[in-house]
Amino acid sequence: MEEPHASSASSSKPPTFQRALVSGAISGVAVDFLFFPLDTIKTRIQSTKGFWHSGGFKGVYRGIGSVGMGTAIFFVSYETFKAALPRHSSFLADSPSITHVVAASGAEFLSCLVRVPTEIIKSRTQTGAYGHGKGKGSINSALSTLRYDGPKGFFRGFGMTIARDIPFTAIQFPLYEALKSFLSRNYLDGRRPTPGEAAICGSIAGGFASAVTTPLDVVKTRVMLEARTHMSPTAGPLEPVPSPSILSFLPRLLGILRNEGLGTLYSGWAPRTFAISMGGAVFLGIYDFASNFGKENPPDSQHLK
Image (cartoon, rainbow, N blue to C red):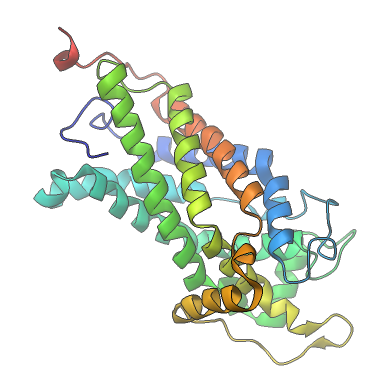
């Protein structure tokens, strides 16, 4: 849905750096805490060890300590890019949807510099890659990753994560912005959607984007778990496994399709789609509330008859 001209939903003053940072951190922590169990179940389903051997339904909050500031960094970057890009390009000024794609993609890249190390720790803790039980939490996974893989181990699969997250974000945020603009323009007399209305837009956008990109998520999860599966739990590390190039993403995806079938590429799609759809509502609803708290929200005069 193309946005033909600026409306009050899209042209309002962007939040300040501090407000975007705090709002992003609040929304990120809230959604991670609420939906972390579903993410754990999804990760265990996608693991090559299988769901039950990865822990089943036990310890579904294992790894929660590794989630952090990736969301806050994303929103600070996204709001900055979204406001700055149209000022430097007449093409982007006339194409809000493309601006949202570029802004979201750039913000996702920057946030992945923080998110990938935390994803490594989180996924290995969730699946018990370094053992289960007391003392086998996020700190143990971080120290074990450093011991077995070195500092580079924390960025294993960085290119693979980019290959998953940028397409996801490039679908989710433009769709989210377009839904808000459509709602404002056609049903709200030009005023900004309320946090509840923004939450519904976020749920739809997140659910659609997550379903479409599930095969990319399966490949990314396999890569992040791969280094540990090449180690013997009794004899210690075998041959070190280098971090794969992003160029191997497509061959890996096709390899899973050929050897394990289409169903495997969509393994975990149900908890992933449900979690991100519900998470999108909480995530973007809370962010919208926090970032616009205290701001006036009058209708656009051009919509009043």
